[in-house]
Each structure stands twice: as structure tokens, then as C-alpha cells.
Length: 458
Image 1 (cartoon, rainbow, N blue to C red):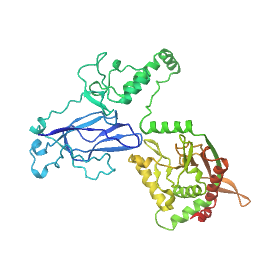
Image 2: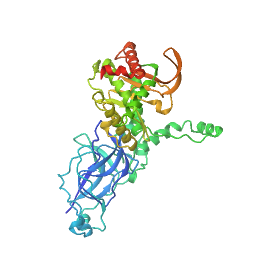
Image 3: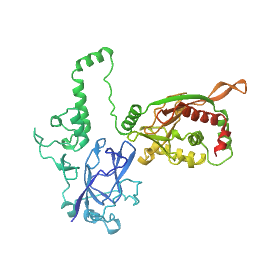
Image 4: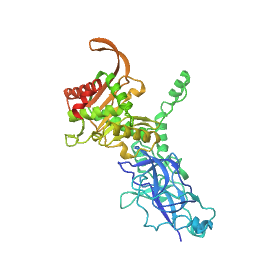
């Protein structure tokens, strides 16, 4: 006799409370093995595959692609103990791996975080079997949240329509809080989820509708007069929402200031050309700038710190975990190179390349995107000369690098065409004064203009 086990969205770590379903990797009726990825989700940190800790036959899925689920909400149910031989009459050599008992799940949470078992080939049950038929698949009915002893919502099916005093078809505590804070009566909404489940998008729509009603006539006449189409609204969620929250917090909490300087990068570019001509792995310009930053932070450790506002203390950090801004199809991400102060230019080049490729493919892990102590932002790749970076909270500083282009420059007392770059440093004025920030930036500029200065710290 098979046993139906429910697999819920696990705790994804890093303080994340919800995730968006991007792509289901299995369908109802598929046979899955222990630790086989079953769904691809996007959090505010990264895109990850979630493996199922049970092996058996998938009997139900919860959540459509594009919907958001809170941690702890049901993802799918698996009939454990239902073998393919019972389902399709296949010979023993073609059977799926034996499913574990109810308490034999792997306990693993995310692919790449301790999950070592290879994923089994996906197979569909070809006909109903006595083992599966004995355990009817739960209908994908909406669920309601009710308090239990642990404080987490207990999930029960909704029977019939919700009356004025009946249960509300909503599972997410975040959806309930959003509705409560904006005065939305959930009983007046019709959910767009499966079987009427109320999603966050339904509440957002109700909030927008309430805000637009008073000015709907004016907005319509204005849009008609101007000949403009209706505005497009883009939800601030996932990576974009996380970036918005972090930047807003940075502006709100950090009294930042910016200083900048132009530098002649001709010698640095020549040094890089000579390094790459000598053979071996190629050295990137970003790696050389990172080495300069690390050397500068060794001289000015105040900038490699964070502020504990509760304790009113500045924490100077012993290790340099260097973040770098990277633009991807999913928006701006800031991967972190661990222990940058212990790496040479070759190692830095390789790590920058690895993290950049992971960012473009959407495979960065939450650990790749957190824990930075200082950020290097090469916005010159966008063809701009200067910028005033926003500090990557809770760090204390960010170095911005513009494009390197030929410009007229006084070199050795004569006007010449040189490769010039603008460097800008945004810093937290709580951790240091302008003298320290200017000293760091001047050291960076000196190393760019004369790379031999770095030899004193190597």
C-alpha cells in the first residue's frame, strides 16, 4: 500500500520567506527519485532548483508557474511505495529506484547544498495501478490558513464558497498581511489561483483598483487627450524587488558622500597587455582593479567595515569579500568574491569569470550574493564616464570605475593623448571622514597611473 506524503516549500535560507514558481520539472503521474529536482523557483536572491526528499509517484502539484508561494506552503504530494512495476508492468530491470519510507527522506533542501544523489530519469505512469489507485490523489483545492500550536499556518481544504463569516481561500500569511495593511477585505475577492485560491497578485490588483477609482475619469481623459496608451505596471518582486529594498535602505540609513578623480590608465593598460602576452591564463582589467582595491583597503581598513546601528559601533572586518556589480537578464546582481585579499590577479580573473557566467545563466546561489564587505562597480562597460554609486548596504563604501578612453592629458610636462578613466568613491561618512576616503581614492589612482606602486604591497 502506497503512502501519500506532502512536500512543502522548504526554508531556502538567507531570511527568504517566499519564492516564485518559474518552471515545474515534473507532472502529475511522473515517477521521481529521492533528491530529484521537481521545480525551479526564483527567490529574491537567485534562481534555484528544489529537490524532493521522497521517491515515488507525483499525485498532485500546488501552484501555477508565475505564482508566489510562502515558505511552508505545499508544493506537491508523492505516493511513496508505489513502484513502476505495479503501475506499468515493466520488468525489474526497468523499475524506478526504490522509494524510501515516510521517514527516510534525504532532508536536503536545495540542489548544490549537500544534495549528492543523481536525479533519476523522469518516467510517466502509463496506466492506473492498484497501489496508486488505493491512494486517491488529493484534489488541488484551495487551502485556508488556521493557527496551530507551532505558530505556522495549518492548511485545510476549503469546502464551498466562503461566506461572510466562513474561511477565506488564501494560504500565504504575506497575502493576509498585505490585505490587512491596505484595508482590503479578502472575502470580497475572487482568487485567480487554482480553484479560487487568492494570490498576492489578486490583492495587488484590488489595491490598485481602489487607488485608481477616484481619478479614473480624469486619467482616462488625460490619456485620451495625449494619445498615450495605458501605463504598464511592473511588479517589484524577485531580484528587482530585493534590489529596490536594499537601495532604498541604503539611502535611508547611510549618510553617504562621493569623491572622484581622473587618472591616467595608460600604464595600467600596458601592464595588462604585457601580462597577457607572457602566456598563461588571461588577466582581466577588473582583476587588476580588484588587486588595487584590496591593497588600498589594507592601508585604509575603515572602508572595509559596517555599522551596527543598534550598538552604535563600527565593525572593522578582517577579511575582504569583494562584491562586483554585474548586469544580467534578471537585473543587476552583485556576486561576491570570497577572500579577495588572499587571491592573486589570475585567481581573481577566474573567479570573476565564473560568477559572471553564473549570473547570466541564473545559477548564482544565495551564498554567492551575500556577505560582501566592499563593492567594485565597473559602470564603464555601459559607455559612461562617471557616476555616484549607491552603497551596497550594509557595506561602507563602493568604488566606481568609468570607461577608459583616449583624452588629451599633460604627461611629463607635455600635452599628449592618454588613456584616461574617472574613479569615484562613495563612502559612509559615519565610518570615516573625507581625509580617509580621499587617501584611499588617491592611492587607487596612483596605482592605476603607475602600477609599480603596487609592488610595495605584494
